[in-house]
Length: 372
Ligand SMILES: C[S@@+](CC[C@H](N)C(=O)[O-])C[C@H]1O[C@@H](n2cnc3c(N)ncnc32)[C@H](O)[C@@H]1O
Image (tube, rainbow, N blue to C red; front, side, top):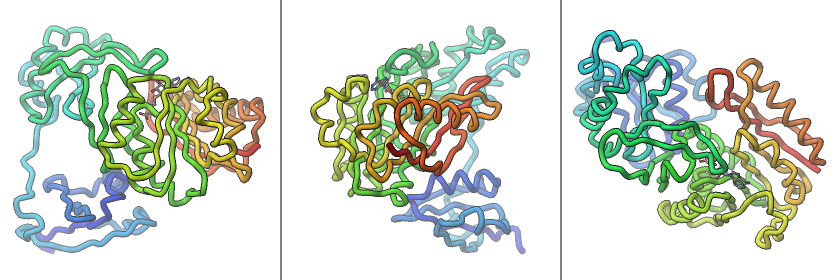
């Protein structure tokens, strides 16, 4: 096999994020070349073919073809590598602080967010503006750099930010899984780290589609149900949130994504749902519930019974649990509260750790069928 022979895997655009994650997990993507798209397909250059590729991508359609390095599929797609944040910062920060430099940052739309809140990172505070400038210079799409200035807190699950470089504008448009979202990072909750989870939930609609309605109980700016509706225009969804700004942005996001299906967003405290007239038609008619308020979801289970379908409804419930045996803990806490709320567990469909949350806790999800 000559050095110049390469492979490209062609996949359906809808499955892009999931398959890229799977390929990354086995380290086969050739990062010397750009991943690119054409029509409904995404093309991913591979550095090698591994034997268990069919198992890894089981259930997904894909095609592999071999090309020469000078083939038109790769020509002009060679990447000149951008240095990592840490590498670039090493040039401006004294050597003694290199081991405490931030390795990564989050990007939401054209905003970069860094975190420098560990005690040992205090010496970096005097370089904070330089760090911001480096980010702006190296990433032309970034217009503002903010530093996290508090934890996620309060009823609306938001956090404070300090501007460290660029323009002071906390509103942006973030792209995720073929959708776009108006977000205000200070006024509303939004985590780009949930992109994969939201895609998983959206893809499940084929498996669990029913005649009922999907209710995202804590909808924020609407990313769960908008992604479901974009993929399955026949689905019907509602979203509720107590944060007025989030609901206003969610409504704007319906238009931004040219959603033709049925979605309604309501500014609503779920604790008062029984008094909300628009919900009387939804009695026994919710086929899927999404509960992403991990610190408190469990306390809201008691509001579900009037809406559960006779044959059962699928619930996606997120919690924060101890990183030692998190799924076992999630199930125990959930089952106890489900029983206290007059409902029954029919079947666990899926469970996993979604992401780390704090030194001792992780975020979990249970997909579970519940009945009365
Ligand atoms: C963790 S965020 C999730 C937002 C969204 N699902 C997402 O993934 O981006 C939780 C949301 O629950 C909302 N919330 C908190 N208490 C609520 C209540 N009693 N009724 C309705 N929404 C509530 C907050 O305003 C916040 O937007």
